[in-house]
Length: 162
Image (tube, rainbow, N blue to C red):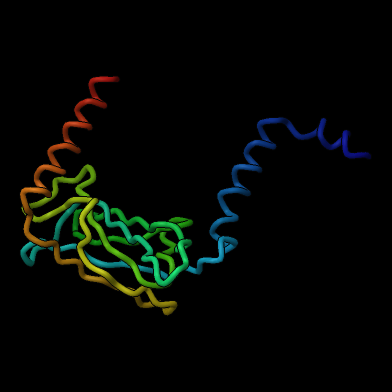
């Protein structure tokens, strides 16, 4: 059999699925040069857990290196807990310093600042298995309230388009 015989045996759909799987799995192998470590935590507002929202782990630029890795995301469950995913489901965040931001997402939110543009805190993700963070949200400012209103208005505009 030559190569053209194999191409006749594989349907275009099968080839597409194989290529999609390959591209999905490869980034999780660390080919980007940015190792990740497991990251979990809990989000609180006024001492109470916050159900719903998104936690952003944004790698922080250190020195002259402009390439810092991909942002990790964690969906906040109803108990206020999150697990960060960067390249694959639950794989963690890039090892190194991060800026944490918390957005309201589609959850109910709270009376604290849940503005995806506002830095909440800085943390260091280490290569070890334990990277657990408690995020205490600050009080909401007028700027946070305006950002939430703009986001809600954009969501309403998107709904009108459908």
